[in-house]
Length: 151
Image (tube, helix red, strand yellow):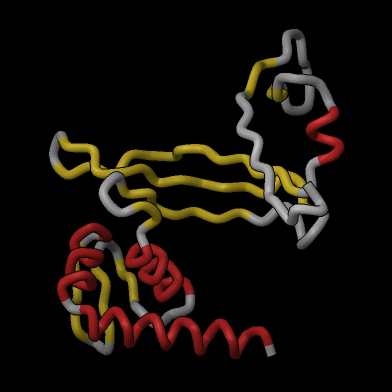
């Protein structure tokens, strides 16, 4: 694997340990070799469904880095995985913009430059998809803010 510069990804499932009184009762199958030799281990869980009416359009996903020999471990990320597009870039930009104060969020309303751009997260994402120039502007401001924080 090292000579060919290949990446190997193992997907595993969680089982419950019986009789655990304290600590995490979850474990992965197959022994401890994979846990020991892996450079990175990531716990991926669905935390909710994204629905419009009765139609399920995607999942809200939470990822926790359980082990990382390459970068800092124990980081957590949340994002949308939409069935028709994959990871939602628009949703990520909106979440980061709200976190960094670029887009104001008050209740269910999202405001950008004093103008309401949507009521509810889904409608705001739709507005940003329909107005790519606003999305690009917000994206650039988020990138500048994150770079500013690194220095």
